[in-house]
Image (cartoon, rainbow, N blue to C red; front, side, top):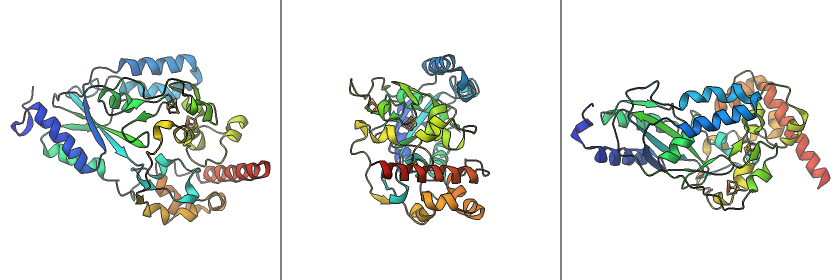
Length: 319
Ligand code: SF4
Ligand code: SF4
């Protein structure tokens, strides 16, 4: 085995890694081993068997079940929690664009955009060989003791579910943290399942990606089945319903920081503005915020915005 970097022992490296993660801005950090994630694999295969029409969505995930298959040098995983529940969401966007996408670190103007790059640099300076990603994130977070599964399928960290999980494979055998295997949910709670507008939560811990609004808004092939399209209501991208109703998230959103980069463009992201935006506005204002959505989806943004306007007017008429 390769000697530990800087002549530190494994425990000392693990502590240093966690300190570096905190310094990089992560809310939490744990370490896990890399045995194959057999329960994850079983869950994915079960999903495919029960809903064969979802095969194309789920099958590619199976290559994360055994992280060492493609990276035989890896010995441990570092799992970090990035909290985004400390931003004030601009009012016109609340309930229309899912918070995970509004405060997405992948967006180059998000202040936390460089967080993983900075931690990666620090890990390398420590002498570690690293590779980002390649793990089933939520399962790795549970194994590393930094999150637990809610019945809505989201990972709940100490800061609730308003968080992202980021992982690194490393070549040092580090002492793993205690897994968090128990459910955080009160025994009888089904609030998330009952609140899901499209029936994507078919039962506890089972979310059908092909029915979730986050998928339906930009990635699902069109046309969307009318019963799903109408159920998507005022959401233009993504959906927060199953997290908003969750008692585990009570008090976990703290509007401590202003999201300046969003405030600057919020008036151009309202349903009215999006429904009538021109292609130049889409290219220069909207697409840079959600760059992983293919650039040719301007019409889809307009259609989703028109649906949101219709849903709003319908609910105003019937209330
Ligand atoms: S994000 Fe929305 S659509 Fe998706 S499972 Fe949760 S409530 Fe249902
Ligand atoms: S709403 Fe209830 S059942 Fe769903 S994740 Fe939250 S606590 Fe669990």
